[in-house]
Amino acid sequence: MPEVSETVFYSQLQPWSTVAATPCMEQVAGPPMPVRLGQYYQTPKPHPWRPTMGYENIEVTPLPSQHATNAVIDPCYTPYGMATQPLKFPNLVTGFERNPAHAARAALYTRYTPLEWMQNNLRFYNEADTGRNYSERLRGDFVRVMRETDETTTQGQRESGRRLGERITDTTFWRNEVRTELERLLIEAASLQDARRAIKKAVNDIEGPLHIAQECLYHREKRQGVDLVHDIAEQSLLREIEIFRNNQKRLKCLYNKVQDQMSNNRAAQNELETDVQSKDSALGIDNMCHQLNNTSKGINYYGGIEKFDPTVSTTVTWATNSNRIVQRSQSERGKSAQMRSDIENLMNTCSQEVWDAWSNTNNALARRSAETLEAKSKLQMYLQKIQQELFTLEKNIELLKKAILDKSDPMKVAHTRLEARTHRKEVELCRDSAQDRLVNEVRDLQDNIETLHRKLQEAEAQHQQLLKTRANLESDLHNKVNALFIDREKCMGLRRSFPITATIKY
Image (cartoon, rainbow, N blue to C red; front, side, top):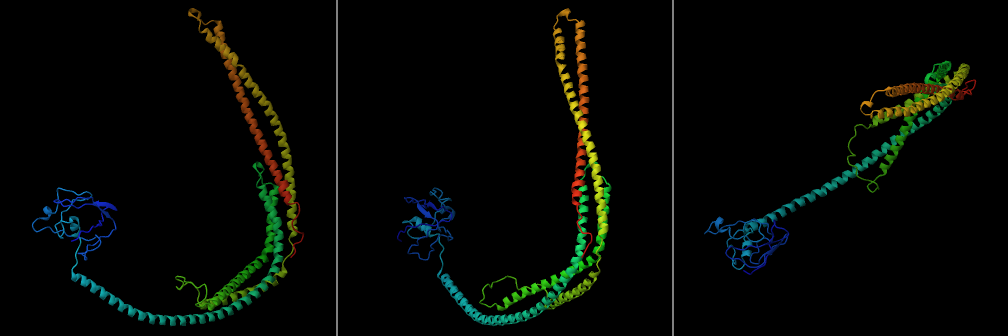
């Protein structure tokens, strides 16, 4: 066998590593053989049936004359680069002496028999015949199904177009009916609107003074402290509001009916307009759908669009709904015509009671403003006196503090003298009259300082009381100013002119 250099693929080795297989008895000199992952094995010419990759299982058969455990394992030598214990393979291929590594490596591949090779070829032939026959049958079915589906699709599309045309005709009829009724209802609603406007003007004329009276009450709620009193002005405002509301009720007696009828007319109009818009939109969609064909632009797939929706209406409920809307509009038009004849008898006068209440409230606010102004003047006078007393008391407090501070030096002198006399020696350290006088002097100074501190505390307490009184006066004065501003500026400013005419006209 000719010698062939080989490179073997090992799945457990690194991309570049070396393997040297050398028998125990004969060691072949030379460097290790390089191994590369993914490199193919070059098959020797005498063995063409061997695979070209090294991913085959091998079976090691020991020689008949020795056991595998003893003859194969080489306990005396470990080749460089092997991760496991080396094995010594029997001489299965001739030429072991010329290239031991090649002979041992050739024994690792599995051999196939000619019978297996023939059976594998027959299996592929049969599989190809079966697949070709089945494909021919499928092609025949494909042609038949395509013809049937084309006919069904064309017929279904033609039927859908016819049904769309019928639907367009029905929708156009009901759209015209609803649009005609909507025009009639709009004319009647405009006539009722003119009659309603007269009653609304009378009611709105009362809304002005009523709103002003309520605003005056809200402004007077912003008074603070004791000025938040339920006085005559507030009582007059409450009576005024009550009179305004009673007069408004009489004017609204018929206005409410007109308002309700206008709401009913508007509801019927909204239904008619919504139905007309829906039908116009449906007609546009159906016309577009009726004109669509297989070559139109914008056609696309929409998954699940063909599923049935149980919440949509049917043709019967659709026609019933349009008929109901038209009948309701006709009924509301009849009621509106009857109400326009009743509006002719509307009352047009309530202004005298409104004017009397307005004048009484203005007089009460003016009197209350005068009382508040007088109280404010007195508070300012007392506040000025308290301020002067505070100024005088603060000067006295400063004098008391200075008097206490002036006692500090005499107290230091007395203490120093007493401390110095404690250094007298022996019998000279006696309690003489001078010692007694120094002690009495210290006590007198302490009593004086304590008396001054008490007076200072009383002065500061009185100062705080005066500050509190001044704060109360200032707060009350602020409240009076606020109340006077509310009554004279805000309330009277709103009520300088009567917001309506002497007669309520329609």
